[in-house]
Image: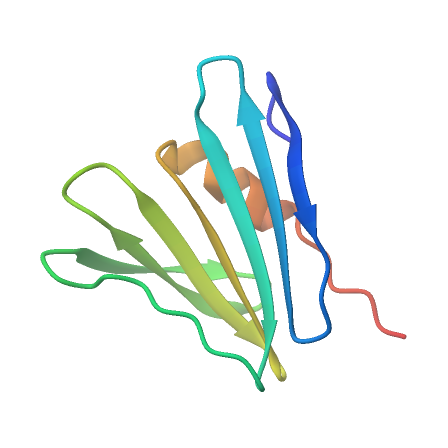
Length: 102
C-alpha cells in the first residue's frame, strides 16, 4: 500500500474482485482482479498507450488526457487492472501484486 493510502473498499467475488485504496486528499487507487469469465471496459478514446514489463509479461499502460492511468495485464486466465491518477503509485501497487496458487 502506498504511503498515506489505506484500504477504503474491498468487494470479493467469484469472477471479479475490487480493492480500492484512498488517501486524505480523496485520491484513489483501484485494483480489479477478473477471471476470463468476466469483462472489463476502459475508455480508450484519446488515450495514450504504452507497454511495460510486469510480472514476466507485457502490461499495457493506458493514460487518459484527464490524468487517470490504468495498467492492464494478464496471468493465465486472470487479468488485472490497477488505476488511479498517480502513475508512480499505481505502478508500485501493480508491481506489488502477487498471484498465489491454490
